[in-house]
Image (cartoon, rainbow, N blue to C red; front, side, top):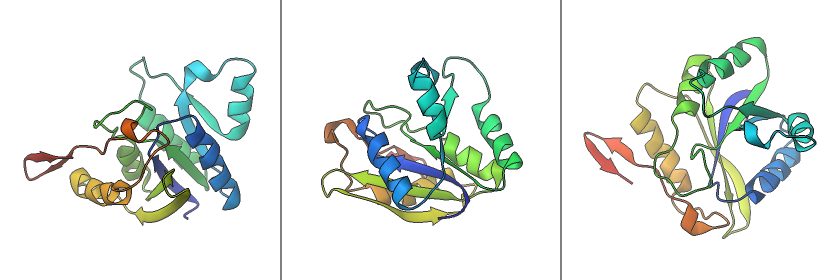
Length: 169
């Protein structure tokens, strides 16, 4: 795993994903930061989340989160930011593109991780340099998640991928 990367992890259907993800990071000795909605940064939970590497995100304002994270990569020689591309634990096919923008602008690779409750496994099977073709890059990402199951499988939907003018997913 690269020392500088954007690590995306899915499926994200339960708070337990964080717990298993934390175990994965500890097992592999990874130091990561993660984006999480600011609403959960209340006392005393906020102190714990910051200690664990949490970065509060205000999802209601028009702030430029992508640029803020890119700036963080410019300041740190070693930085791995974990992002759940679904952006929610609710079912959605509209995955966020921010991870791709961050990786391209910061010139860091994207690492693709998963937690699979059906097989009781987790892994990091893909690391790639993002291209200027988001849809093509997402086809490789979708392959990783094709048969993965979240804690609540009905809550996990693969994203729509646009290829040559038609939507898939």
